[in-house]
Image (tube, rainbow, N blue to C red; front, top):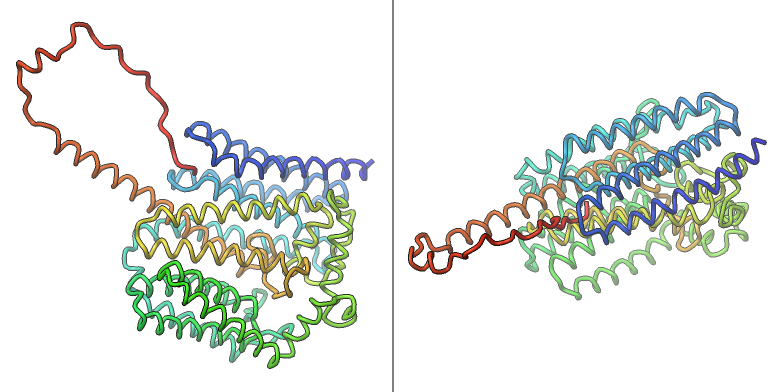
Length: 486
C-alpha cells in the first residue's frame, strides 16, 4: 500500500511542479496588478502542496517521525519568508521571492531524503535548515542596505583587496580536498570564501567600469580580474575560476560595447585552458572522465558514470522518493544533487527546476535593463550571470555536457557557504529592484511637475464661458493601471 501511495505521489509532485513552472512565465503576460497577485498566490499554494506531498510520501516510505519535524520547520520558515517580504518590502519582486523559496524547497526535500542513511540521520538536513534561517536574515537585511548606502560605488579597490586577500589565504593555507583548495574547516562548519568573493568581484568590476571605460582603466581592471582568476586556478578551484572569468567578460563587453575586448578575452581563456590542462593532473583526470567515464570507471569516471546511471534510471517520471538509489552517487548532496533529483523525481521535474532557474535569470536581466545608474545596472547583470552560469556548470557537469567543475546548484545543493552567498545575491537583486521602482517614481514625479509648469496659470473668463459644456459630461470609466511584473 505504501509503495502505491509513493508512486501516485510522484505524479502529483510532477503536476504541481509543472503548474508552478508554467505560472513563472505566464505571469509575464499579465497586464494588471490583481491578475499578477492571483498568479503569485497560486504559486504559493502549489509550492506548499508539493512540499506536503513530498514529505508525506517520505514519511510513509521511511516511517520516521523526524521527517515531519523537518517538514514543519521548513513550512513555517518559507511561510515566514513570504510574509516578511510582503510586510517589510512591499515593492520587491514577488516572483523572485517565490522562486527562491521553491528552489530551497526542492533542495530540502532531496537533502532530507539523502541524509536518511547518513552516519547521523538527517544531520545534513538540519544543518541546511539552520543555514536557510541565517540566509533569510541576510536576505531581509541586504535590500535596505543596498537602497540606503549611496557610497558603494566608491569602494573599488577595497572590494578587490578584500576579495583577492581572501582567495590568496585559501590558496596558501587551506587543506587540499579532492585535488582542490576550497575551504576552511572551523569546527563543524566549513567556509568556502570564493562563494562570497564572487559578490565582491562583481562590485569591483561594476565600480571600476562605472568610473571609466577608457583603455587604461580597462587594462588595470583586467589585470586585477586576471589576478583573481589566477589565484583560483592555482588553488585548482576550476569552477569558481570559470565563473569569475565569464562574469568579467560579459560585464566588460556590456560596459564598453567593444567586440574586440570580448574576442581577446575568449582567446585568452582558450589559451589558459590549454596551458592549465598540461600543467595540472587534476584537470586531466576530469577531462578524461568527461570524454569516456565508463573507460575511466575505476578512476575519475566513477562519479560521472553513477550520475548518468541515476539519470537513466529515473527516466521521465522518476522512481519515486525512497524508491531509487541516489546514495550510490558520490557527493550526491552537493556536486551531484541534480542527478539524485532526476533519479527519484524524474526528468520532467528536473527540467521544470531548470526553467525556474531561467525564470530567475530573466527577472535579473529585466531589472538590469531598466535600471538607469550604470553601477547598479552592471551589478544586476554580473550577479545574474554569476547565478545562471553556475547553474549551467553544475547541470552541464553531471549530465556529461561539459567536464565536471565541482560547483554546487545554487539554493538546491547542500552547503552553507553556497546557500548564504546565493541568498545575499538575491537580497542585492531585491534591493536593486526597489531602486528601480524609486527611479520610476521619480521619473513620473518629474513628468508631472513639467506638465504643471506648462499649463497656463490664468484662463480667460470669456473663453472659459464659451467652451463650458451645457450639460455635465459623462465621466470616463476607470481602468485598472498596468503594473510591471513583480
